[in-house]
Length: 297
Ligand code: AMP
Image (cartoon, rainbow, N blue to C red; front, side, top):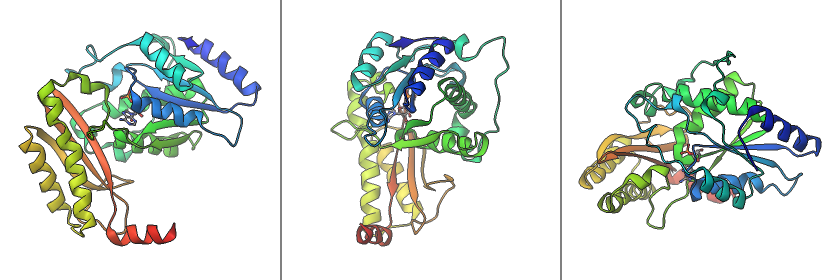
């Protein structure tokens, strides 16, 4: 079922709730690929309770694009998205207009931007996370979701949404992070991959290869962040990329870490290949922590 207005969505959600179904939201900008579909499948698969009512929103949110970014040219395929989301188990595909999300006759609540939004993408894409928080809060409100699914592919976005929900929305929504889905050669799926030329597409595999290299170094007890960062940077530059950042960070706050140790760590990467900007990330687990985890299992 495709819906496009707040009223239609609220009626459908009320009917689902009356039938005892919890509401799960999967926010997307469309051009759905297997990464998006994995979120929908995760939202559907809840065997221990009444089948969730799964709402997939498809909305290219203008407020999260900085001037000069690809808002106008961002891939759009509403019919294909409807078919793919329904096949993956979505009950509703919500495809609103801009004025439905941002009505001109109503003042929507605003929230302070969490500190975790400051660095990395926040620094390089001014206004981006303010736009993300704005649209996500509005979608939460419109769908009355109990839980919402986000990809670890956009790791900082996931942490920003978690922080907003914790600090400003009184934990009203459970935020669930889902693993990154990759092409067989390692490239993280992204709607923007279609911008890559054949040659760039081949070279783009350097990102996941560099992340794997870093994980391998950490397994070999190379835990110095500077060594890992400069190794990743060199590999990406050798593949012809311009590196925006390659950063070893604390996994919750995204503050830089000097060493991989006991606290959960993440390696965040953003690089440009021609006119396409790619981001990716992975967990870094120190051998001592990994062996404790293995023992605990
Ligand atoms: P987007 O349409 O790019 O805004 O993405 C919508 C949601 O899908 C976000 O929560 C993304 O993190 C998630 N997502 C995008 N690509 C992937 C992927 N390759 N694997 C898992 N989730 C993804």
